[in-house]
Image (cartoon, rainbow, N blue to C red; front, side, top):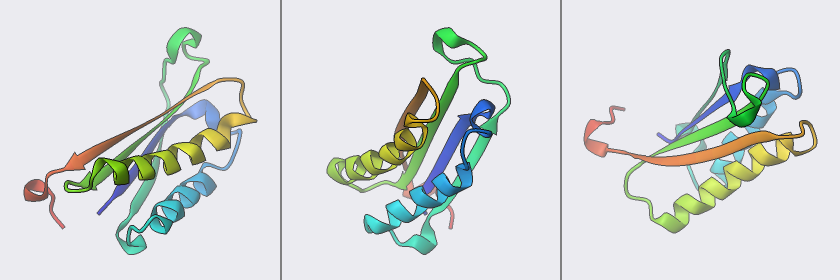
Length: 114
């Protein structure tokens, strides 16, 4: 049920293998105690992204982690720190500046269908 959704500016695609990063994120969340068979991980390339002062030339990567409600803040921070570290590490030595952000959202059990 957890969803890892990574949106990234298209200009990052030629710099490294994003699918490898997604696999690393998927595996890392599993290593933190989430049942691997329930994790859904995907990347979405953005053809049009305007980033800060750099405009169209800027690079960005944003992860939204969707979790069913009920986890405590400490657990969410562990998940978030782990995933953000993987993303930041992947771009750290590849591009001068890339905005790397992450947000964790709760999904309402009453309106999430399995």
